[in-house]
Length: 300
Image (cartoon, rainbow, N blue to C red; front, side):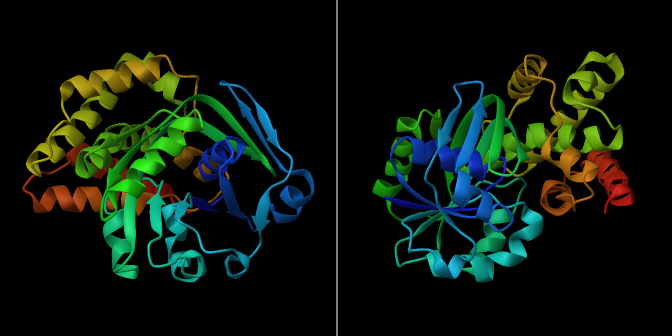
């Protein structure tokens, strides 16, 4: 299959490069890094083994790209307003779009933009950062779960799973709603708290007070998912996420990096939207509402 990557940052750059390195045909859309990547290729510094892509199919404009069987969107959701111009040149009748993005409600809004599109949610569990032009630093983890939102072709869905696996990426199929809310269990507490307290994930868990607050925030996400009838998101998963973070390389999540570099933060899909959805189902995420208000005060 032919893959297209929109958003060649810490996420799109890593997974797209892994697919290309494994032999898949991959086309990258890159504005700021275009000339650098065209001349020097892509470098992935990875805890699982570093590698360099010497020759990269890279484009500065979507209109120059070929039609793709699978388009992976690694943009921040703050840039989804660009999708109506970026996606159409890459789509054919059967293209599947994989949204590796943070938050709740992303697929519903993209589906409104493209009613006939086949969408898959990509839930990445990875610590990575784009450190300089054409270079991604992969620090730990790296698996991805795929939740089928509106993909009509099961064989294509399964082929994507296989392609990721063959590229050395742990990849699993999970129920869509469960996948999104499980990701929120980690994302909602850690992204916002590292910004509000100007700290890292490891330091939040080393302090007993903030460790308990992180657990409380996670449990609000669990209770919200229960109010919505989502199965598979429970207290055991909370403990798993805390244990995973205890063993994680000290890390600044994407929202903290956005805040530090004065970029817009993904408050809407990470906080506002899930809080609204939970409230409509009869559950109030009180502490996360307070965190959202703090982020809006700090937001740029």
